[in-house]
Length: 241
Image 1: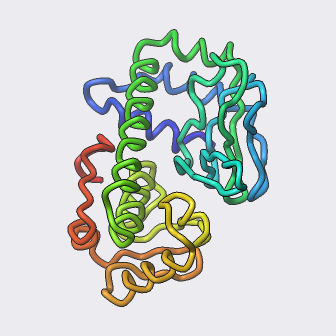
Image 2: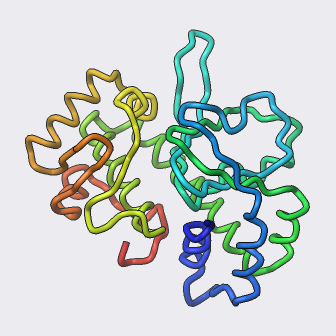
Image 3: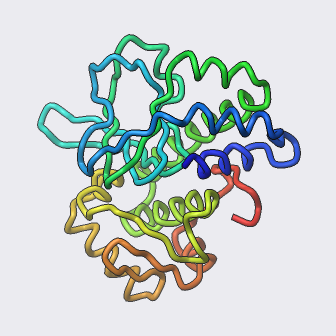
């Protein structure tokens, strides 16, 4: 069940930080408390006490904040293999929400078990690497919101999710599942659903991406990346991704 997580940790180190068999077994052993979470329900909410670290096993979730006027800003999408909040148990309460976007399965990992993971140097280094990449993704999202136009924002996000999913074996060539509504895309990119719809139509008309319900197909990943100025270097993934 934690294969995506294991693949992500291995890609974090590759040859310089390969995980030995005993480390892989430990990673799998701490992911045995897996719980379902229905779509559009919180895994943990702002103000809750974070007694567990949450790891996505199946499905998609997001980090988000609700503003006083009721609007929502999504600050990250989380897919299988991603920790929702790797260091959150250091805090007394959550300062944001983690919500499932699709029917999901989530591993609940206790503080004690996280401590066991962090005691293993190679696992600790891979988790540290993963946290640094999360920060790099957030920086890229800030640039997306502040300096890219609507076409580039949506196209850049599609390219990012394709690369991240491919890294954990959940995208084949240019095809992958993205269970997001146009409203959710808008909440992540600072656009209205109408503007998101126009942008998706342009991507389709220019034959850069096609959409069939929740399935996306990119005919030529390189061409789309060039069209939206996507450089995957901030993801620090293996070169073939």
